[in-house]
Length: 153
Image (cartoon, rainbow, N blue to C red; front, side, top):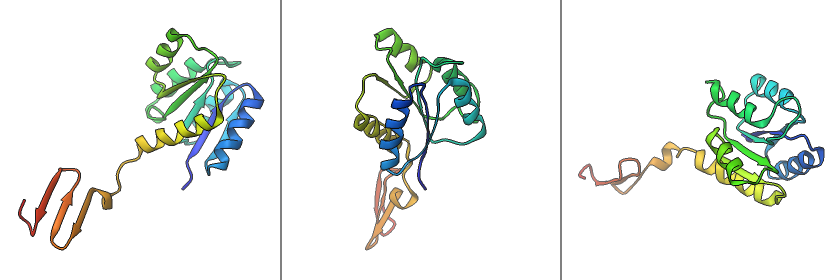
């Protein structure tokens, strides 16, 4: 099933550009142009990732980040901050508020797509078939880091 991404960004051109690139990669993308509308969408629907601008009308990105992290239903939602605030102090605050990644404008849309893919790869848990493999009486257990042959470790 395709991953669902919400973009909260007040600049329409940036929203449209990100939507285009992410949809081209097979993601389901929604967007909001201000913080309040974006937070309402997060409360109503389940998303797999949030791409969040910090400087937004109605409600700023840090307030949205705080609200998302404070709610047990959305606390684990991965967040990529995308902003013009490029100072080290701004990046530190964003990451300490709970962002998983921080990208400054101007940015490459291809880099954002690569970061999204990397974040999803890190979050994916191994499938049961990947945890254990067996062939000709030899069992490889990747979780326990054990190999056994015909029941003997």
